[in-house]
Image (cartoon, rainbow, N blue to C red; front, side, top):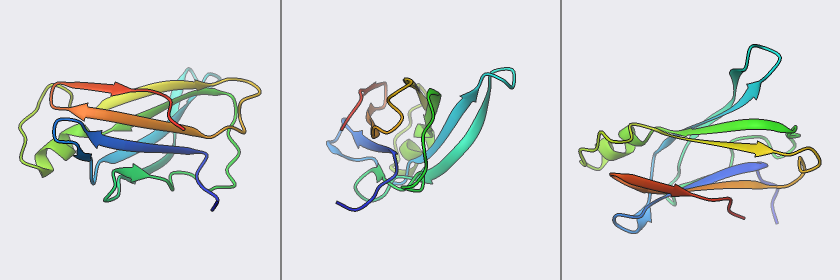
Length: 122
């Protein structure tokens, strides 16, 4: 298997059963020593299959802490002609526990104009 980013994501538009293409995604990490501010780690956009598999270099070493992934859903809805102002963006906050830094973290987002669901993928 080819090396991949230690954190990846996938967007599925569950209202039509298709990948969420061209969704801007930003990954940040909470910095508790800097007044709990968020520091940018990476940014990208979902591909034709709704995935971002290149957020971080495959050699990037994760550290224990709290992370936040932001999906700019308003950009996606506008690109397909759907008027949805309910969730202009979706933020998923997750924690990497001490001792779990070498695991792979996959963040799926199942999206519809008025709801979303997420879980830890594989």
